[in-house]
Image (cartoon, rainbow, N blue to C red; front, side, top):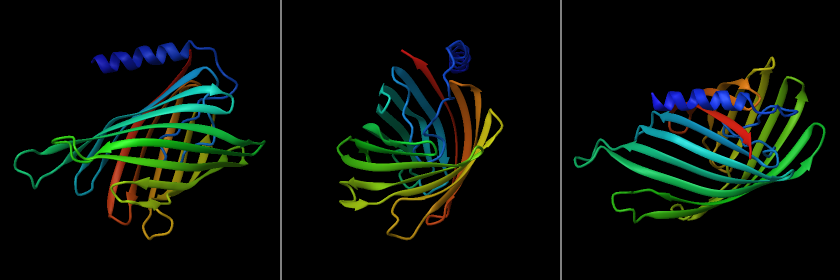
Length: 244
């Protein structure tokens, strides 16, 4: 009940904010990061819940990305993704907690009429076995994001870059391509293909809907399928922004 009351109050508050020239641009629910930054002096929060029908039956609870606009070309990003994994083979415990934390900066490299290009650099940590919190794994990531507006109702987003994770001890080259379509002023949908490494086999497909409650508040729902693991996933969440 408290969570529902918080959402109602939050929606009312963001509806009272002065409207910007454009609506909120989020980095969820699709995997592809946008090539846009949060307006200067604004704080944007993006939160979600997801479930993956994989071997561990992974629940990602209250995943959070906070984005702060530093100037018209740069934003600071802090992310946190607490995750519950079911471990049916263990008698002592059914779940373990995996906590991921990352700190990053997104910078606009090029801003044109129909084309935008940005880069995102981040560092982070993750606990993979939290019974004793000893397996702390660092990772580093550099990502390039491009967006291309084909028509007023259709845009394409492309991501690629490199990730290094100490657990795997080698570079991976993630990729994603997202087609986004607007359905009027409030609703949109996307269809996306993505994968952990474009040099290897294996990719995933997802699609979803977004709805603008106001220019500063958006809700979403999405789902997809990992072809390499033959597992499905669903997700829902919301995003908001306000001027500091």
